[in-house]
Amino acid sequence: MASDWVVVLVLGAIMTVGASVQRLAGIGFALVAVPGLVLLLGPAEGVVLANCAAGAISAVGLAGTWSQIRPAQMVPLVAAAVCTVPAGVWVAAHLPEPVLLAGTGVLVSVAVLLVMWGARVPALRGVKGAVAAGAASGFMNSSAGVGGPAVSLYAVNAGWTVREFVPNAQFYGLVVNALSVVAKGLPQLPVPLWLLVASALAAGSMIGKALAQRVPEKSARLTILLLALTGGLTTLGKGLWSL
Image (cartoon, rainbow, N blue to C red):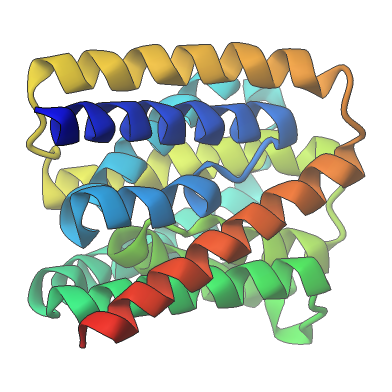
């Protein structure tokens, strides 16, 4: 019984922190939440729950910002992701759990380091860059729940401002996470846990909104990335230990 309460409390904390991060910085829910969810619920359930939550937060964030979406860039990104989501689903369904844990840890850690570095890659510019970023993101999102960094790198190389990036990233997150959930199905959680998830997401969004008025964007982004890197390395270590 005690262990059940621990799971409930930890799950609520992960969702609250993830939602706070997303509201504070515009991105980051999956990077922060996926390692904890995978360790808590296992790779399969943890990733698809992250897909559900990230999609829901993206939908809320889009309210009032639809006019800022850039269809010319979003169409090739989404189209490429549609093609690679099934491959990610297949990989997640067929690899042993320790391998999935290690793989998720590697993807999160590498993605965070690339975003922190602000890597400039000529191949990630223009329509070809959008296709490459969308393909990588779709696979990473459906297999490990962390498709955002590939889109972030595309935005950096395309010269987008933060104001341009946030609504487009939220639109992309809504579509691709919905595709991932449709391909894999909803996680098998009891109704009380779903209510907990919804409540934690709402609370986290309010906390993040309040923090956004007080925390400098640069400091918030660095803290988020360091938390995500810690989670990724922890997940990698658990996967390697279980092999």
